[in-house]
Length: 120
Figure 1: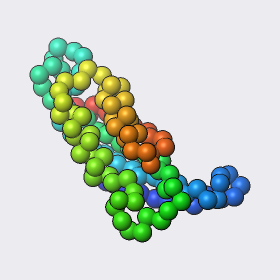
Figure 2: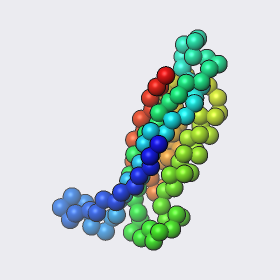
Figure 3: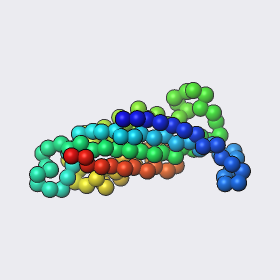
Figure 4: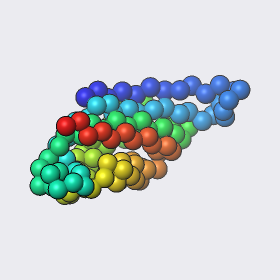
């Protein structure tokens, strides 16, 4: 699993110069998940790979190397783990929607892209 963050410095041509935007990525998070609609998928776990791309609005303040001024990828991972631990999920689409909803609860998150893959 890799986690990344990068900042996009807005240009005057394409966006408001006073709005700082950055991205937080969680790549290749692999978890055991009770997922699937078929009988042979019930009662067993399958590995899923989860990738996130969150677009974050910085609200015109500097991060200043303080975790409270950003979106913490560790909290994202813990939230995903809690969603997966709740019990059986039929569809990867349902899992992706639950993860996106959890991410968007943070007011700093403007856009989230979620990719969920069953890899077994």
